[in-house]
Image (cartoon, rainbow, N blue to C red; front, side):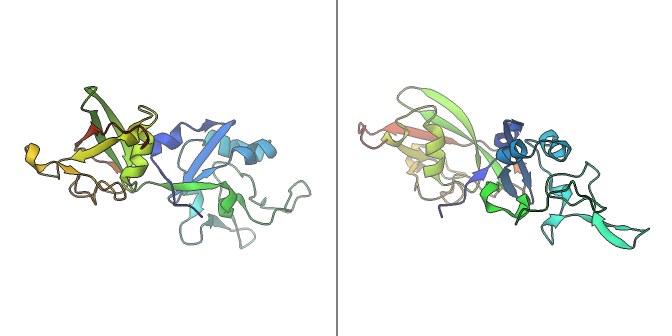
Length: 219
């Protein structure tokens, strides 16, 4: 199993159609595109309408299962789905139309899980010193510089051919620039001070300076 991938809410929000349907809940990110395509119908609609958003309110954080409520008439617990009953949720009353042949409900099925939602979004300005070009990236606080570098390849395919440097948080002057450890996060490299609050976006925007190494074999 490879490393866990983290996503920002903005990244998840781009996957907001039936043809590209992602949702998040309880800190997890799920790609349920194949699920809603395979099971079209009324039960797919709540998920499709929520595509690209967080649906944690649908689930119980303790059981990681669909929230339930007490049916006062029957005295039994039943699924609590004010948004509408969705795929793999049994109907409150027995029905021959409901297909219960699946082994694992999708919200517990690892095949749909693509990563985790970041606990905090960081903004960083990446400046190509040679080209005098700067780009602001929004990245999960859990990502290492190697992973951030991979994001930057969409802007510069030779991102790995640069030395990545920055001032430690609170530093000033060229003498304080240091080469970043690409196996560590921005916080571990002391580029940022305190981590942002969970779910927030860090306001401080530090600058990472890229210096050309003249080695195209790196990136």
